[in-house]
Image (cartoon, rainbow over all chains, first blue to last red; front, side, top):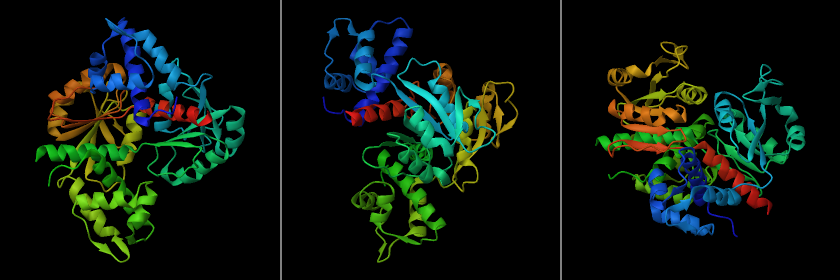
Length: 208
Length: 208
């Protein structure tokens, strides 16, 4: 199967999270329109995405929740799991670390990095914090493939280059600095200020 | 002028941030292809967006950086500025609060809310923290129009309903729970787990 479009992968991740919430509510079946409504999208979109991953098993009571979770997981997860590090363990880094706690996920948070002597060699939010000059060594030792970048903007470029030299294969960039990466490294960027400014714009427009 | 598409607003916000960085480097002119390259998009996209906001003043040295910042600001900012509150001042809330510090922005962070007695009535990250039962009163008193929601998932729906009752006009939802809002409230949602799972998927695909 060819790689899925990015937007489809995002929705599959959201479907899975919604389906896990259904399981927690003891719901074992769900119709596409119900799944769609919970995510503010159309049932057609849900069915199209599931067709893309070859899932057509529709019961008369709807999709089998457990079965669909397993199918999505087979597609989007890596069989052996993947190790993740948080680069810059300030407030945002700690907030992100909290998402990994207690999740039966294939993504394992195994380290954080920072330059603050108060943090280095301590366990913060459940993982050990290493200094930046051990980046290459620890990335290799702990087989870290994904880096979540939450350093101050001024360091973003420099640290990203070090991550790439260290062999990181995917970067989730939360700094406000757009990065350049080689084609074998996957980069996803999110800028909170842009989201806030977007909300402000549409609030202003709604008032007109 | 009709409201701009959401994606255009996002890019205008990014152009402005890039242009402000240029000013800081003492660059007073920039070509569309240079602005585009810094944001990994095409020059055609930049020119199309600026045409949409009626900006066509291209100097032979490129765009006048200061003038373009002012033009974008006139379009996306609210004249009088807008007041913002952070709902749930944990690690993520504090990380977001830090973005507002020292910015000459039209967005003013004026309050935070939490249910932790250790936080209530204290100044955290530069703003006073109020209890949830004062939400309606404080939103009215401080004329808060935008809420940034960073509460634990279990409270998200309940608190969002209270925000809407209190008259909030825009919500930026960072919880993993999709919300429903009336049509006069603008909702923007961001889910970090989805971004992380997307990076993991493409790292896995790149290895195949």
